[in-house]
Structure formats: structure tokens, C-alpha cells
Image (cartoon, rainbow, N blue to C red):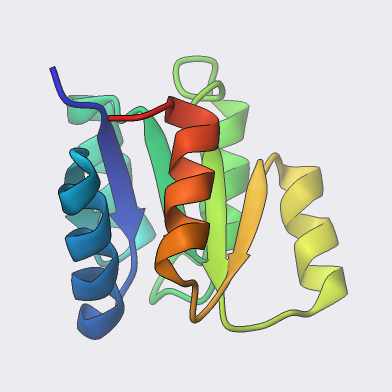
Length: 123
């Protein structure tokens, strides 16, 4: 069974780029455009890894991270934030909320491979 990655990103172009990379690596990618829809997906699909943009419509990445990491059913799912903002206070807040790692956009193929292999191993 393929390892599944949930990517929460409201920008279609960003989702397409990451999807191509991860599917070429052999992972299954599940997509969500906001935190609310992602929550329902997590309850149904139990992904092996979550990649999340910080600035989303509705529930932002920080709120989502706090929610997921406070739930005993899902807190052990690794969560990696992808952001175009290298703001140290935002990173500190995300780490306090339970974020496991960061990738700065635009992340390149090697960075995306490295972070997925770090948490999931090869597909």
C-alpha cells in the first residue's frame, strides 16, 4: 500500500508542482484547499504525512496544526509547513503548536524528496 500524504494548499499551481514530485516518487497525494476540508479528510483517510501551507482561507495553518496536534488520534502524524514567509516568529509559533519541520517556498524537488523520505522513508 502506498504511503499517503495530505497536502493542504489553496494555490492550484503549488499543488500541481508538489503532486508531480510526490507521485513520481511513488507516494499517494491527497489534496485539500483549506483546513476545514482537510480535517474531514484526515478523519477518513489517516494520512502518513501532512504538508500544509500557513496562509489558508478559513482555518489557517497555525490553527490547523494546534487542532491536529491536540487530538490523540492524529497527533503523531508528522506535519510539515510549506511557506513563502521566512518569518521567525511564525516558525516559532508553528513549532510550539507541534509542527515537525518547515520547507520554504519555492521548495525544490530535492527538498521535497528529503522531507518526505525523512518522515516516511522511500515510497
